[in-house]
Length: 284
Image (cartoon, rainbow, N blue to C red; front, side, top):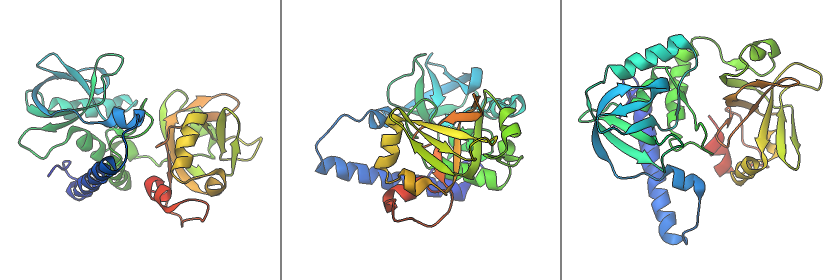
């Protein structure tokens, strides 16, 4: 069993969900013909190997004694200097430890592996430990979707306890001035979607009325197809309270572009327009 320091219950639920998902994928793989799926390829685990943690690079890059470099999968490093320093110290405390490294998909553009990394002969998972302590976000980064969606449950627990990144209240989509102050940074924002506008190239999720100062989330055509494949639609999203995340930019107003896992529905009843599978995948 693998857990995060201080979050054993959440971690047990995460690994139980992950094991179930793996069994489902194996079953489906046996029953269905193989087809190219870039998202699945990016998350496909490689063989596990043992490494030694030699050091920590910029933004949490894991430097291994073999010369390999890795980044923790489904984790976004914090922007705030104080939190980043605490996260670095948390990792640095494991310097010299033996690690079990499981890479996912191909290396990134800097030839770094995306990997699950556990301290060998312990139940300490590095990504889960950082996120569970409120020192990092559970995020897909440049990928289409999370390879480790269960880390969102670990993040939820840290947010409920107001640890680290979550000491302050989550930004609200209707608070234009607060959003503008975070321009260029990764943010997590909550609010109710007032209107969904589907266009040929992208879809817009508006959280405030026209002319008001608040958030607009943009979703690319490709990502919107993925969202719809999960059973959601413009009709099922309008009026919903959601949590969104991404890099905040300011054009006419605050805006961010979300990936497929960047929009989470927050604890509201199912609607007929959305299939139950899609709802369960996106609800937190």
